[in-house]
Image (cartoon, rainbow, N blue to C red; front, top):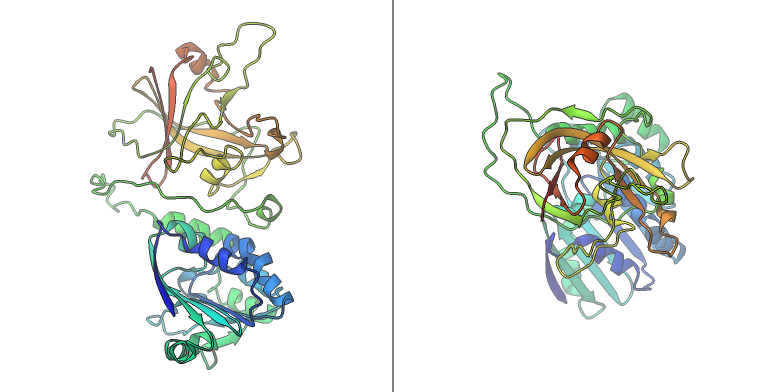
Length: 400
């Protein structure tokens, strides 16, 4: 038996699970037990997991519904899978279902992972988590495997009054009882929980903690992203560009996520008839590394960076073009220009093997004149991800 300790985010559990499923091993049994389960995460793993079923495995998933951690859309997706799915719930409020177990078993080996990692993008990629991975050689390690697995049987093979087999009728019953949020409701709830301002309206004290960047979760394939409901739509023709005016609050930059020297086209300083500006900043590689030593992939990096915002097809554009609006505070040469909703547009086909840009941050009609007047050619634009719960990004444009 080999035992490995996994500390995330340095060692992400997601790639570990993906690697186990990609070894080509014909598993006889695969079991996932998770307190919270997210739609993006199961969609990302769906093809790999169902392939194990095609290869002869028994696939069993046990999910919890406590604390709104699993949405209706998750259960509606899982009920369509060719596998066993159980919902675990004790109606007593103080008894929350909270285990996380991942088991892969075949005749000659088994992998068991026990830890704090939920079946969510945070749990498998970005959260701070700890887990232990056990690799067993069978039958040599059979006794030790049985010893470790025996106490977990109530979760691995669930039964009893706190367990129900997943069905369409069960989903409707749980929804009618109000214990099953929609995916949009769950996302709204997560955003609302980030910070609760004082009831008396008093200013919050400075945050004693400093933000640290973590590796992002992989981008869900485009054909699957449409399956994830958005929290709300946007009026693409009339976005609310200005969110708030300049603030007296001290500036807090955050974590560096991108930097670029602005050419004339990005700065809207094109005068020749034969040249055209693009109406915004082309989000290119710009030799930027994240993590250090690894050049970013411009075709996916920015779409991943803003993945938590509400994306939708961009009207009147290419079939694969989508956009969202991201509130950002912007400073130009040290002056606060307030918070604006900047439109981010992403077109995967823009690259087309020709090294063109695929993503752009548009300045917006209400801000174009300001950008022209400031004459930002040759300045350096720096993008930070902030610790602010409402305004997640900061743009800082300064002379070199």
